[in-house]
Image (cartoon, rainbow, N blue to C red; front, side, top):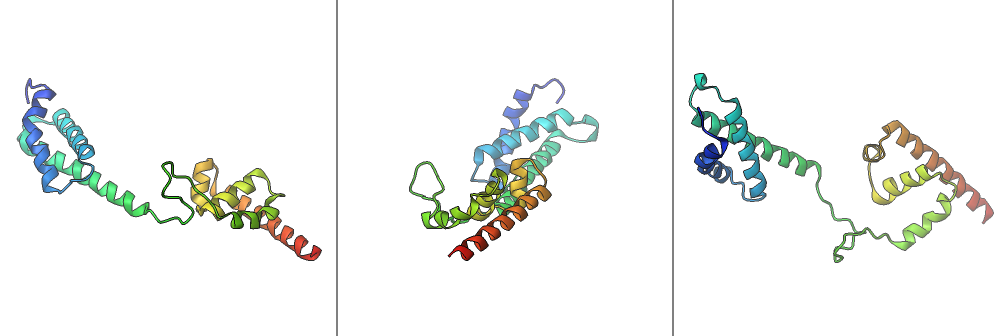
Length: 169
C-alpha cells in the first residue's frame, strides 16, 4: 500500500467488496452495506501495517467484519422494533396519521379536564398510543420516576373524577 491513494485501492478492491456482499446474501439495503464496506476498506487502508502480513487478507477480514457487524446491528434493531398493526392507523392515507375512535376519546374526556398538561401527556402517550414509561421518559428528557409520578397523579385524579361523577348520577 506504499504510495497508493485510497481511490486506487478502492478500484482494486471493489470486486472484493461486491463478493463479500454476495457471499453474505445482503440483497436488501445493498447501497448501505456497500458504503459500510467502503468505510471498512478505508479503515483497513488507514490502519494497515506492512510488517504484519498482506493487505489483501487484512482488507478482506476487515470488510467482512464490518459487514457482519452491520448485519447484526440491523437484525438487533429489527428484533427490538417489531412493527405491529395498529387498528387506529389509517393505512390508506399518504401521510400516516393516527386516528382514534371518537367513542374512546369522548369516554375519557370528562376525566382528564382536571389533569395538568404533563398528566394529560402521560394519558395520551401511555393509554392512547400505548408507549411504555421508558419511552415517554426518553422522549420528554425526564427520568422514568418523573413519568411514574405523572402516571400516579393522573390516575389518582381520574379515579376521583370517576367517583365524583358516579355520586352525582
